[in-house]
Length: 395
Picture 1: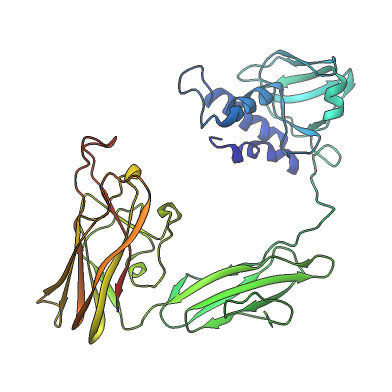
Picture 2: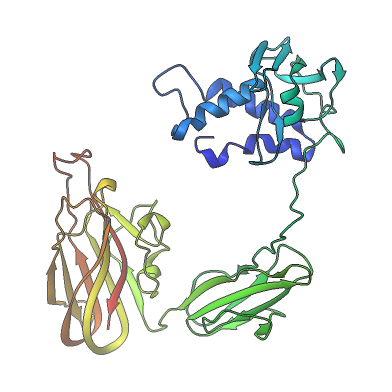
């Protein structure tokens, strides 16, 4: 309820013949989530929508589907309300016996006539008159339910075929992985590609799980007569080098696991916006990890990817130290890279901190120094900074 895209949700029980559940939810929201205090709105009052929801709902109905001239019945909050309409008419809404306990609609009349629908048309509202609800403490499960009494929304023009959906255990795999495709609308044909191109009816037809054995961009479309093509759905699947392993020597914050240790060597980079996931977060501690290449190999570049979002307490590391070893015990430093992004730069930035090198090794250790305690000039002064990291790069 704290965000506008959710404001219709409490009313959806009416569409499945259970309007008493809408009545219970809406009453609870009005009673518990709105108060006459400075923090009396449950969410961000964007253009007045939080308040608009309350005013509409207090009248006993709400416009669930934008553009559709119908309002879905909830539960009236006051014994009596009047709406002065633009055409000069007045709609009077009366809720007999309404109280904190009596919020279930028992019956209703519109201008003296029995009213059994759990929605009301805009035309009926604009005619004015009296809408009377009889309220009680227990649900009347027959009121507003049944064919003709329940609101219905349909799309009958410009039909859109929903995209298919991909079914896979993960975005990463070590050996092989199977990808399946499903459709929301039955009776569709599905066509797919694995080379990154957009599929059409000349592409491979999906008949069963597809086995992937390499990093693949998988795209699929649905097709059905009368609908045509859906838009394509795309999934990227990454094969991890079987010979590489990673060991974390630091403990990441449980809220920011980024997919676990192997996410650091899977080739899948975190998005520019860290909130989309894919980043590992370490608060109040350095980041340290060891990559095992499987055998001694030439190493020409070492780096690690980081993000800075000062508003969210995320800073670039002070410096990153790279060391290598042949036996996993004795390490020698090969590069030390200092951060150059200003610590008071409030732009969200990503950067790979690393260097070209010329050596050989089996093990590569990465240690990134945490920014530490947040300084006084920041709103989070005294708190502990985060390091957000994704992908350790060893070429």
